[in-house]
Length: 320
Image (cartoon, rainbow, N blue to C red; front, side, top):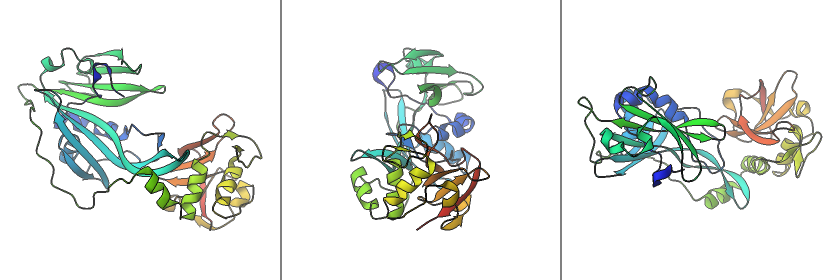
């Protein structure tokens, strides 16, 4: 979302500052239609590659993850770079929740410029404010987190402050960047995002994708003990319902389901696998990829997307 003044949240970046805050930035993947299904925080291979992800236009491959950055003149004296990451997200398609690979906004970066350029912009000053769209923001400057000569801003997302942008000021030791930097060398095999409708259609032929899609379509449904759909579920009722959509019959019991198929370790889970929790087993969900599951959790949470590690892991099973 845009802060007041009609600007997207912004960043100014210098290498020493990026070294300090990069792990937080890479973890703060934002801008998903419903929810991100991905990704543990990615870490760059070198300090140089870390800095270039956010300050050099072009495609970047860092620690096995693809990043795409585009830079433009924000004003006569400020250059702005927008960085996206290739990941998996949950989006709406035909009224249903579907898993979709694509580019997701990560942050905006304003390259070093003078403090005077930010005299009337709240992203360059310590404080809190509310944007014209009602979203709340806060900014810290010259702290241990930012280093001297920089500001970092946070947006209030739900009840949590999330790192959103950085401003870096030029100085006698840090030259201002007033022109768009040269592009990074071209990379081979950079993924290209399909339209959501096309990706969803291509996935329907897979039974595992049918299972995942059926479970995701029920996110937000109520939890009711012994229920197995179509509008309310308990944990094994949800898994039985989702598998039924792919032509596979499961018993309505998490413990009995755990005896079916082939056992799978945590590290070998694939989308559509059953994931079991606690000892003795008393809960089950469906793995959807990127360290996430769909499960009918409890009366408070209902059917949700959660981390595969959100409960004590007991094992996995591949059925069908």
